[in-house]
Structures are given as C-alpha cells and as structure tokens.
Image (cartoon, rainbow, N blue to C red; front, side, top):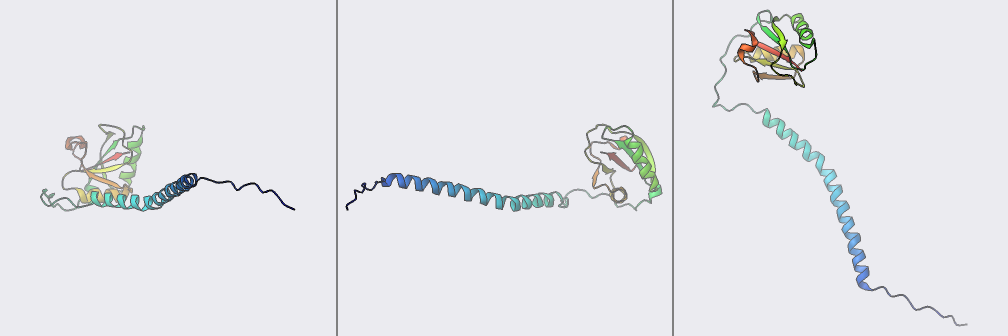
Length: 164
C-alpha cells in the first residue's frame, strides 16, 4: 500500500536567519539589563563613598587656621538656640535640653530663615572644639562654622543650635 506523502514544506533560509537574529538581539538586551542591574549598586556605592571622602577631606593648607584657644567649660559656653523649622516651641524645648547639660543659654528665638531639615550646631571662629562637644552631647550630627548667620545674630554667644 502506497501512501501519498505531502511534499516537505520549505522554509526560506532568509526567514530563519531573521528570526534567529531577532532572538539573539533579545538575549543580548536581556544580558545588558542584567549586567546593569548587577553592576549599578556597587558603582553607586563607590560613587557615594568617593563623594563622602571628598567632602571630608581637610581644608587646604593655604587657608588661615583658626586661632588656638583653650576649651571653655560647659558652664562658660554660651549657646544661642534658634528655631529653623518653624514649629512653635521647638527652640524652647531645645533650650531646656541644652541647659540640662550645663551650658549657658543665650538668645532663644527664630533663625533668620526656616526650612532647616536637620538640626545643626554652628560656631564662631575658634570655637570648633566646643561645638563638637555640644553636638556630641545633643547627638546632633551636623557641625559647621556660621553659615547664614552673622556673629551679631548670636548676641554674644559662642555657639548656636539651629533646630531643624
């Protein structure tokens, strides 16, 4: 018994090549996305560490050094407390915390501007050691020279806490 077989279907080689190239292109895109996903996190971490190290580098030696002064005791260090977040009573509450740690309280009031996201300890020239001690006592991470404040804004105080 003879069976009639249908003739084999012919696929043109060009169509097969185009389909294979399309599949290969999709695989290449998937590999590129996977590589970016795996490598992006270490690169971002490295960039952040480099930026942090850059901001933490010491000042160039060409800048004038602050005059060396003896560290004032807490009871002789005057601190101005300024509200920089706009919340009513924030400066008074912070003044109570500062007073409880033995510091003299100077002016308690509003900062020249609001919008401070975090609290910051600012200091007059030569009073960085006292500012670092106050920041450690209050667990405030940001310490800087007077920025946005003038010495006269402190009304004679050596340090300022701007509540954020």
